[in-house]
Length: 140
Image 1 (cartoon, rainbow, N blue to C red):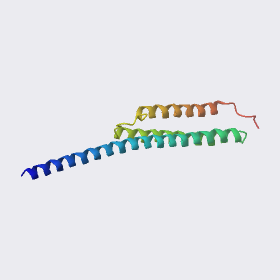
Image 2 (image 1 turned 45 degrees about the horizontal axis):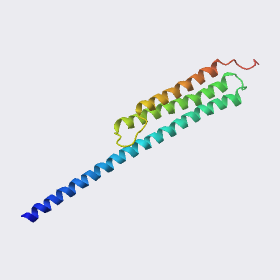
Image 3 (image 1 turned 180 degrees about the vertical axis):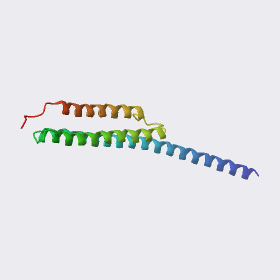
Image 4 (image 1 turned 90 degrees about the vertical axis):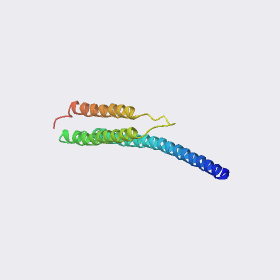
């Protein structure tokens, strides 16, 4: 009997150790996922900014096209695509952040992602407004 009790005790300790290790691995996996989410968010934000840059560059290079509104309309389309990408990135990243729990990592957090994206979206929208408020080129 004493041998069986000892074997059960060792078995329970082994099971507890395995459970603890599994919990730690799960926590580390959640932390890695949160950090990967931040890298993905940053990548999508860069992609959105690239759309804004393409729009501004197009307007700068082809601003003298006629009719005067054509380069602005094309530039606006690229900037709006960039804004959409930034909006979608923050929604998806914040959703992932809200679902997971951080353990040892210190992610920037869903609120900070929303603020970052919101500021970038507002600035991009201001660029569109400024572009359309500029005086048109020489009338022809």
